[in-house]
Length: 153
Image (cartoon, rainbow, N blue to C red; front, side, top):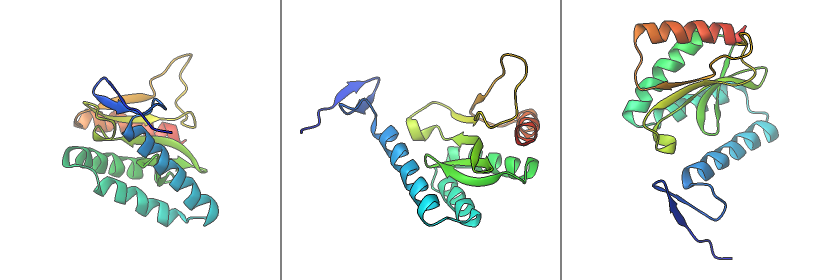
């Protein structure tokens, strides 16, 4: 069956509706699941994959990811670095607590630092779970450090 492509908001998508970047992220996740499920990948291997994902990023994203990585591993050393859909992530008991999504990955104008539902951030009936990141000030780092500590608790 031939695949046709269509142009939508400057992203080429297939008949499946997924862009090439989205399909690549899904493939990365399948590879991660295979590696951890079949071979019982060790935490050290997952941490190495996280650092490799950061190292492979373009300069702007890489600098932010390195700072986020240092912040997370200092604020919550109990979280395990790993990759999640090919992006740096930090897990507790195998479940992702927080992650860094580079801007370049999906052609966004900013990177994202986000928290998944495993994060212990509940505050009433609403709370933020995702932050746009185009740079990091000392105040930003202080906020993220506080959130990561709470999320990992």
